[in-house]
Amino acid sequence: MELNMPVITDLIVMLCVYVLVLFPRWKKQGADMLAVRTLMYVHLGLVLYVTLMPLLVSVPFWREMPYTPMNSQPFIDVKLRRGDYLRQIGLNTLLLMPYGFLRPLTKKGYCFFGTVILTFFFSLTIELLQPFTGRTSDVTDLITNTAGGAAGCIISAWLRPLTGAVLQKINKERGFK
Image (cartoon, rainbow, N blue to C red; front, top):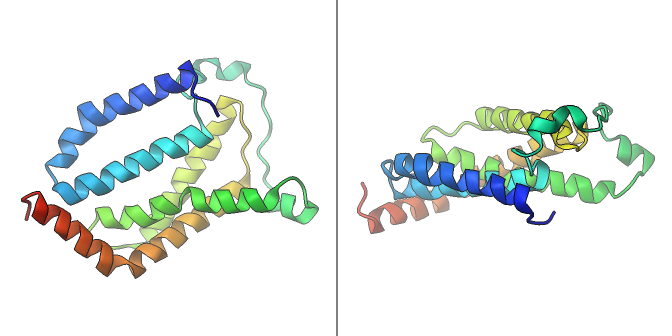
């Protein structure tokens, strides 16, 4: 995808939301939470760039978009060996892995189930919005995105001692806690 004016418009809106709303709120919560939540927001921007952008310019014209029904047969491309299915599965698994990794770092009480459920709904939202931007939806994407979020959450739990130490150091250097 190229950076054209509609995509730049979406990115400018995201930047304004960050600078005017999110940054002031997050910086009060400590340098560690500011860092983690900023990384999550950057990740959200990248996910939206890959899956939905241009969004703001597309939505008013959603009725004019060609509609393709959602593929509701899981892994049909694998069964039929259609297209670059291995690449798609790999990329869709990786897409929400950072979300699954970062989400537990925003809360003191780590919850695998909660993170997986939120990842599922994040992916479902993307899949439901894609037809409004001229793209197609696929249940395989929903499954692989959720699996990626779960894998990221497991990696986050495994690395929790390291990430906890890094986040404490960030706060200490910035004069928090």
